[in-house]
Image (cartoon, rainbow, N blue to C red; front, side):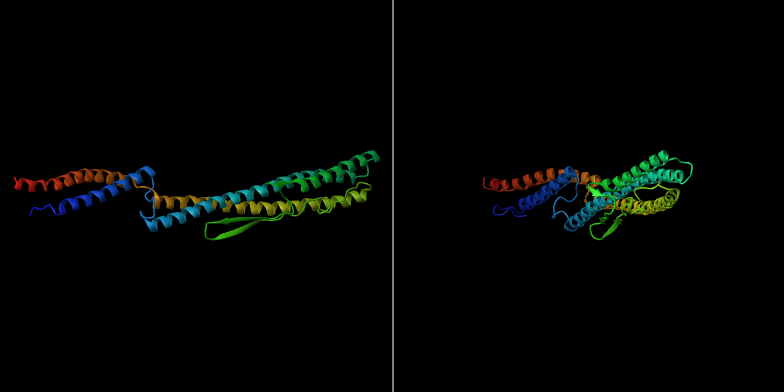
Length: 271
């Protein structure tokens, strides 16, 4: 090999190799410190695009699970209210049955009628005042939206019918006669069946929304796992690369120093 000072090709090559080693070392250190294999589009453009899509899907699925759970809560509030209405109606059955008997005196009938009127008033209060997050529980539909970030569906929390006394077919005053009490007893029994049917509807939708919430939660977990597979740093490989690039960096510096020292041989020829 001839000696010259115009261009030190060996030193240039050593410098280029050292520069590449330093960039690789920096990238490895970034992966180790961030926990992410992809820290910029330059690291893996396709992987970054996939990871961002998976992250969006995870976010949508997580919120969808919450949406479905909130739908369950909405319906459970209504179901709890209807349970109390059923209890009141069962008490009304007792009063109507009692008033249907011919052994009550006027004072007792008046007292039974007053209690029955109070029961109807309380049913109306429950119908009017029961709400979830400021939304009326009866007569209002809640459309529960769920999505995986790409496709979506809407599950209805059905608008439960108003359960006020009038809608249930109950009158404000009875027990004036045995016949009236017996007729009202039939209406009360029908009202109990109506409320039971509404509770059945609510229960079926609660089960559906709970299933949707569970599915969304499972999908969210699996999607997050997939995202982790794409993005997460492989610490075993990264640690191995760290050792490799640290050694290459040290040897590269030594090689560059050695390549630069060869030019000094030319001066010896001039002595």
